[in-house]
Amino acid sequence: MKASDLFVKCLENEGVEYIFGIPGEENLDVMDSMIGSKIKFITTRHEQGAAFMADVYGRLTGKAGVCLSTLGPGATNLVTGFADANMDRAPIVGIAGQGATTRMHKESHQVLDLVNLFAPISKYSVQIREPEIVGEIVRKAFKAAQAEKPGGSFIDFPENVAAMEIADKQPLKVQSASPPVPPADKISQAAEIISNASYPLVMAGNGVVRAQANDALVEFAEKLNIPVATTFMAKGSIPFSHQLSLGTVGLQAHDFVACGFDRADVVICIGYDMIEYHPHLWNKGKTCKIIHIDMSPAEVDEHYILECGVVGDIKAGLKAIAAEAKPQVESRAQNLRETIVDELNSHENDDSFPLLPQRIILDLRKALEPEDIVVSDVGAHKMWMARMYQAERPNTCIISNGFASMGIGVPGAIAAKLAYPERTALTVTGDAGFLMNSQEIETALRIGVAIIILVWNDSKYGLIKWHQDRRFGRDTQIEFKNPDFVMYAESFGARGYRVESADALLPTLKQAIADDTVVLIDCPVDYSENMKLTEKLGQLVCPI
Image (cartoon, rainbow, N blue to C red; front, side):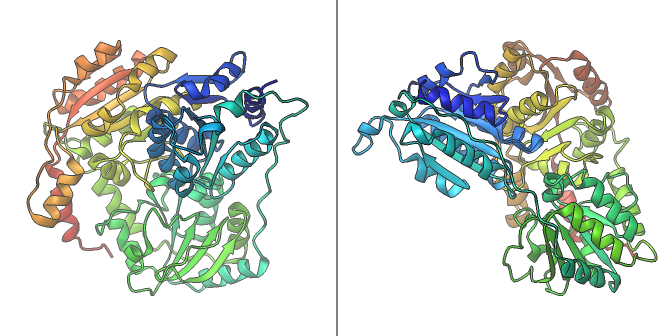
């Protein structure tokens, strides 16, 4: 068999279900070896879309999403989505064809040093130079990508190596290490700190979701009577409806939930990735006692000096600490929670048009079931979704908050529907982010994947306008013109709806779900609420 045949067998051995990508001249042998494979190849319209699909698929399933390109420009087009996955701690394996090794020592058409290009944005970046090492490289790539903290592995596969004959080689056994139990002395130390705390607070990060420790988190909070705030990417790790949930933390501005951190003497960081919400924003005076509970040791930062680090299996650590620590006599944040809930629901009946962001999100929550999946693109709408969307389950509101790249919405929704076909998959996207990968509408229709695209339309780079207005009191170069989005969707064969009143959004969302195809909803949005929120938070008085 050829090296490319063994390569595909190794991917099958890793449990790969889908490969997202585009065929090219330098991956011809790999594509040919895919014929008859149980792996489904999803031909995309752009390599960036392929990488974003692999990104979201990996984040939702915990199994490495796989994307494939040819050499040169095909590989560079993978970079943004691949980097997004790596920084968002989503397991991903990127594969690129490469020119023959016989022409890599000199200037050659479309040849780049891809291994070094991907090295800064991956956990493992390698070139296959001999057919005999295919099995080892594929196994190592998946092991690295899926190990905590997950990220990216990149494989450069030269075309002449892919075509070489090889005999008597089989894929390697798939193995992964079990997480260690945290040391008993660290458990006792953490329990003592919590027992003596006057106002402890939990900040749950994406590591809780990755470790499938959501139930353990809720049990920990309930047993010790400690309120929980989540980062953007950990939304739903405790249901928002839970009485101990304070919702989401992570805005640069001082939000209501930040009031809890102002008062906290002990912050229990569980599965916390510093890249999401830097500690200088919530531990400005460096006075908080920090307990770090995670699979990995803490990052070094002057605002994140630990009182206690509990490294090991998160579920085991939470259970053991809860068994030793004394619970809080009363909930310290009930008034704060009530204030947050009232504020989030205050625009439920607002009939302004264009719609306010708050009304759009409330209607969206009404339309979707708790298990349905929303993929937020990046822009001003992301800040509103992160702050207001009330997630009840983990991984039901996907937000890119590490690399935070625009364009993830449409391909991300496709991946979500492939991962969970029984659920509704919807992307909330701005008009700018939508057009960055809108061509993947054709991909969704071709492969028969029903997704809903809710476009917040304001004909501006709304988030940049928000930043410019806050900093300078004026804005520049943020306006553009959009096509007719309904006609645009229909030109692909999708369905399109335009929202023309506040009361029309909810029934339109319900109709889009019932349509069970690719549906675009053009929803005008009033982003003047951005600066109103900035002013409100600037004058915020924390509830007692």
